[in-house]
Image (cartoon, rainbow, N blue to C red):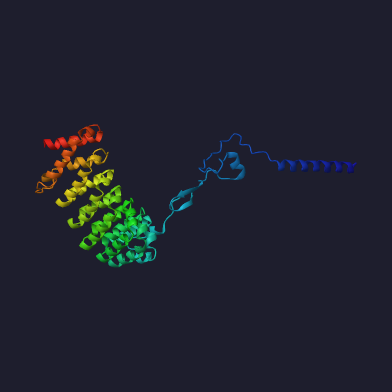
Amino acid sequence: METQMLQQELNELGSNLFLNASSSSNPSPPQFLNSEPLPTTTINSPATPPYSPLAAATTGININASPRREISSPQYGRYHDHDNLARPHQYQRFSPSTPIDELRGNVVTAAMNQHGSRFLQDKLRHENPENIDMIFSGMKESLWSLMVRPIGYHVVQKLIDVVDDKKLDEILDLLTRDILRLEELCAHDHGTNVVQKLVGRLTTQEQQFFFASVMSQIALSLTKSINGSAVISQCLINFSPSHKKLLLRAIAVYCHDIAQCKSGCCILQKCFNAADDEMFNMLAAAIIQNADTLSENCNGNYIVQFVISMKNLEVNKRNLEESSLEGQLLNQFIQHVDDNVRQLQSHMYGRRVLQAVNARRNA
C-alpha cells in the first residue's frame, strides 16, 4: 500500500516538472495592466525600424535614451554624433596669459578652432614680433586652406594687418603664384575678405604695380561675380591712378561682355568714377560703340543710361574739350539713336535709353 502511494506521488511530481518546462519555453508576453503606456521615441534613421514599447521591454532597450545619429559633412565625410553633447575643447583652457609656445607645431589646427582662433588673434593684436614670427611660420604653408575656412580666415586677416613689408611680400608672392587659384580665392565668400584686406595693405609702388598687373589678367571673370567685383573695387579705391590704369585698360577691352552682367554693370560705374580723362573716354567709347546691343540688354541698358546722363563738368570737375565725351562721343551716340528710334521704341529697355537721351538733350 505504501509502495503504491509513493509511486503515485512520483508520477504527480514528474507531470508538474514537465508542465513547468513546457511553459518556460514559450513565455507569455508581459501584461501591463492598470499602468500607463510606456513612452516611445522616433529614431531618424531610414535603416532602423521604429521601436515599440513591447519590443523595448522584452529586449531591455532604453527607449528614452538619445539616439545615435549619423551625420554627413562635405568636409569630414560621415561621422557619428553621440547624443549631440557639447564637449570641452583643448583650447578652451587658453587665456591671454598663456604662452604662445604651447601652440608650437599646432598653429594651423588652432586657427581652425573657434577658441584657438580667438587666442591667436589676441596674440597678434598685441603686435609682439616674436609671436608674429611664430604664427606666420606656422601658418605660411597652409594659408590657402585657411583663407577659405569659416574660422581660419579671420586669423589670416589679422596676420596681414600686423606683418611687416617683408612678410607681406611673401604673402603677395604666395597668392599670385597661381593665378587661377587666386581667381577662385577672390570669388570665394571668405577668400574675398582676405584679398581685400591684402589690397588695403599694399602701399609701395612695386606692390601695387605687381598686384594690378596680375589682376588685369583675370579682370573679366572677377567683374562677373559679386565677390570678385568687390576686390576690383578695393583696388580702384586704394591704388594710385597710374596703377588703376592697368585694370581699367583690361576692363575696357571686355567692356561689352562686362556690361551685360549684373555685377559687371555695377563695377563699370565705379570704374567711370575712378577714371581720369584718358581712361574715362576709353571706357565711354567702348560703351557707345556697342550701344546698339547694350541698349536692349537687361543690364547693359543701365550702363548706357549712366554714361549718357553723366555730367562730367559737374561730377568730375574736369575742363573737357570738344573732343571728349561731352562733345564728339555723345553726339555720335545721339546720331546712332536717331537712326534706330523705331527699333529702340519697340524694345522695353531701349525705351529707357531713349528717355535718357531726350533728358540729356533737354538739359
